[in-house]
Length: 110
Image (cartoon, rainbow, N blue to C red; front, side, top):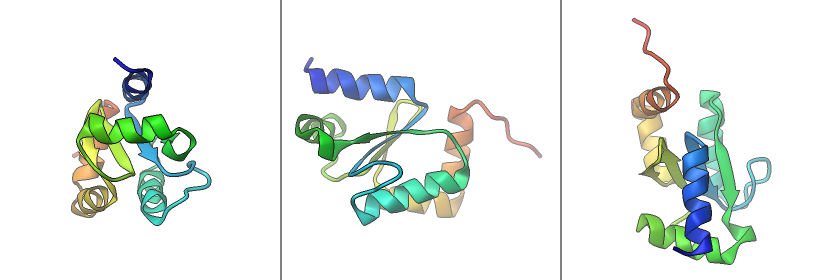
């Protein structure tokens, strides 16, 4: 297992919600990363990020790891969910909120 793969798995394991993105949470370097971060911040949930621009090896490896060609990539509870468009669709349908609550161990209120 490569060092980059170990770093990916560590990030996914340590954060219930993790975003591999271009730039940082406070300074996204692409519109798709910015939109993804905005959605998660609107949910008000804790999440981690990794700047793939700062690490070309990790940037290449995350695409192989997920078998997904684009960045950002969102993982929830250790599972790859998708990129910006998928996150946006899940958010608009309410499914993302359900996934996040389940990952964080929050119960649904009637």
